[in-house]
Length: 225
Image 1 (tube, rainbow, N blue to C red):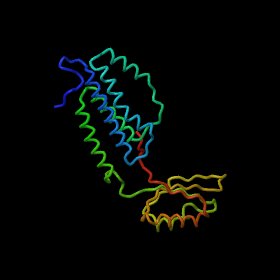
Image 2: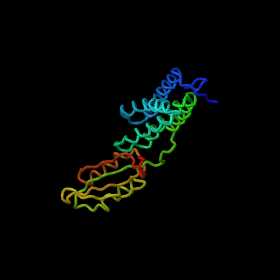
Image 3: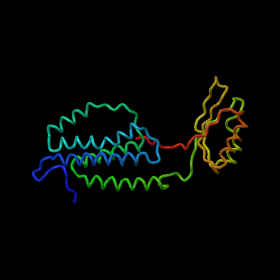
Image 4: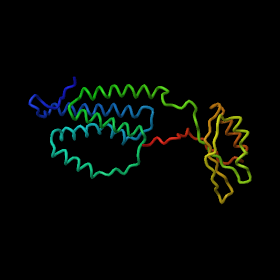
């Protein structure tokens, strides 16, 4: 169904086929980069890398296709590369594999196949992003509160938590300033998100206007792979 544009009837690599594959790789990389940027934080360097990566993979696969000696040389060259960057998120890793898969398909000359893959996966990614698939029904947040040492951190906020929170869990207690300050870290779920400011104001009256931080939901399982 899908034919290779790289070689002619004699099985020889053609300049026209190589150019078509290269352009297709760049266009597919652009689509992948736009998908990655959709509703997410990103850096320009990573986005540019996603655009270029399919073309580079395509060139390597085209060069080594059917050439055992070149394949061994390329494998040896790649083995010398050491990646020192921190591991990325699941989305970063998936985008890189997506770009490499498209580059591999174009490197074999299957331009239409790579375009079909980008179209299908792109539509699926877009629909999953705008839908509520995978989202937690109840939003958890991380609450950090500083209290003076004369307060009992076990019971000081008990009535407020029962009033405003659906659930809460004390996950860490830390002393600071030579033990004069307790830092309390909770995992909480509000009954009503609109009452967050009222809840924080109530805590503020108890801890003497010391620092209170209510941050974004905490993932129980690390996203990085």
